[in-house]
Length: 408
Image (cartoon, rainbow, N blue to C red):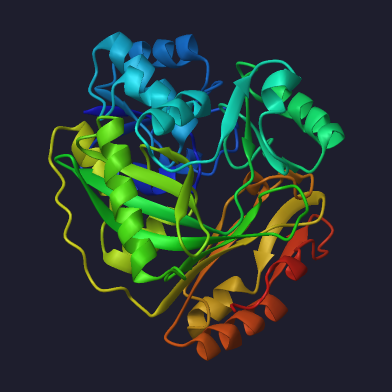
């Protein structure tokens, strides 16, 4: 068999490795010639992976048996579309992929099915009559972007106009969502829908960098800080979403706000969380979501059996940098060997130009820290943050150490 893998980041390395274990030849497509996953694939094409015709051309040329990706919602849309065009298997049909990848369709379905979410308007130009029905602060977001690109909080009309224009330029279709800001802690809910039943895999806090108007995640923290009442509501909402979108067998990621009494859904997708999330899920419950996606695609049926978490605290921290050219990581391997650091990963290729911190996609590395007490975690964490470095081409430390606070 032969598989066409779209996108070449860290999760796709795991995907390619698992495909190879099944003796499946891997064809990787990515727009970056230095994609992280390129060395792991059998065949590589540098193409624009959102170009449907270009992806289709590679699939036909290589006579692949299926297309696949993990942990990437907008890419999943292309996989579903090309698979449908060529009559190839995919765990989600193109119409459903559209609904779960476009925020305006998503919000509409939420409201039609009484799924708790903020009030909003969908616009492609500044329509103040619609916008003025909402209350400040408001959040502006492109309907079809990812990794918090173009997502900004506006406190007044001037900011909203500025952020709207930015979001409209980032959106591939020009569509923009403007919604009321909901205060509270952001939580990330990873689910696997098995035979229509939403089974919770992992609930974690998504901690964001302190920024007045951006939403940039620096940490995924397990266990979530939430009451049993909130956890029960999360389960109910997850099932509502699976039912509303007709998901029968699929991974699912839901981003919510927890205000202590209720939850409000920001957005969701029929995929696993990006970057290192598949590893967090594996460590917290033992379920392999990458394997599940492969199984679904090749016609096998995954079954959810949850295991105990590896530790009381399991945390993924993401590392950002000052502008410069990324050269290498320093000090990480030694701390892993000592057992201080559970694991670490470069999320961007060597030689990449780093422009700073403007969205979650600017993270350059990630690390996992496990501990059985808050004190143990913070002791390890301080040692790591004080010891490791991200070096540029001149051997200078470009790491934003200041963006990695202790766990509270």
